[in-house]
Image (cartoon, rainbow, N blue to C red; front, side, top):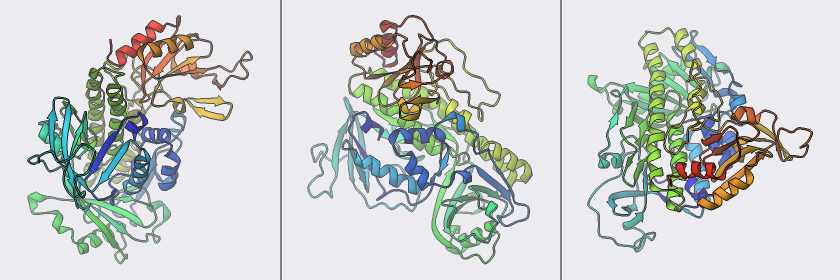
Length: 550
């Protein structure tokens, strides 16, 4: 979707026959919702997801029906001033249907399900991949592609061989490997992962049941229960679809095969606390709980993204969101290099920017998981666990406050904000490397966020009358860069009809009357001039540095 927005053609192959049938991920972070807003699908995702008031609630107890059950929730309006949108819960099986429809609507996107990559070869000018139809099912976790002997080239790139049942050779400049935590492509590249040993062998059981006998406050988004077996219960639609996550220990003879339909029904009834509850098992999926990061996110023309690059624990809901941030960071850079706007060295900043953020995110997910583990082992009381879990449901410092440091960011010498709790507390700043802050502006059509002014191009934000408009046009023309200039007025008496106004924007972005802020296509600030005379040379120099052209 992002490559299409930048005018780049792409081919996506997915070995499964369709979108996910298992809600492996549910939480959509504020930052991901902002990206969905830029794609025009935020409202649809909100409508398809759970009610906002159910998102941040968490509970603990021996079962959902037990007298010792305790519920807590983070403040629903905690992140209201920080973004034009919010965190939502929309399960992956629903979300992927929306994303697939939008992806397939782009004429530059070739999306092929039931198609596997069976061989990969790095060439002097990119990659050659062999793809062919497959009838793989979606009953288990994603595995890496089958890597075997490459067949002879049988077709011209971009067309199926014969009747469509044979292999096809695809040539491309770059390949993005999003083939999961057991990535065969990562292994082929010889890239290792680092992190602690796996936390556990897990099984997710999705089930259909009417939990109407329970009090309404027991049907929360997420509960951690000391049932038999201990498990987590997640709301899928908070109506009839639910999921439990539990584990087994191979060292004592346990295996995924132990989770027969009878065993799953018994585990669900124990977790809910209703021994005669009618339960229909919808699906069972084994998986490995781990917290690891690849030692590198690139091997020549091949880039790792999503779980192939970093695997988080489920606690915190960071995994899918971190993968979406990978795509958002990488797509504009690939586009800039492919169109000749940027030098090839720009692509080196993908690893430099995304890997440190991934390490931090994986570490925070591990911290969340250890809270649950300590409660299950009796090291924390349920009251202590619920307090800690509820506090960590708010993670806007991590989600919105991260900062990129690379050659694609021109520092301005200002210090990074240092909140006491950088996990929970987000401090808005337009310091280079940070996400451009959300500020509400007044327009002739009504209220608009600064984030709504950003698009696939670079954006220069500046106070009205700062003198930057003409120098910006000259710098963009000189470098052949697409650049949008946005002037924002203070709405004083001298400019009552200004298109965009805000009495606080300049202060919040850290610029004076002649300052300017350059925002990259991924919404992160690339350069900032707090004041002084507008300079075509200074802006061109910043663009050249960001795009690896200087």
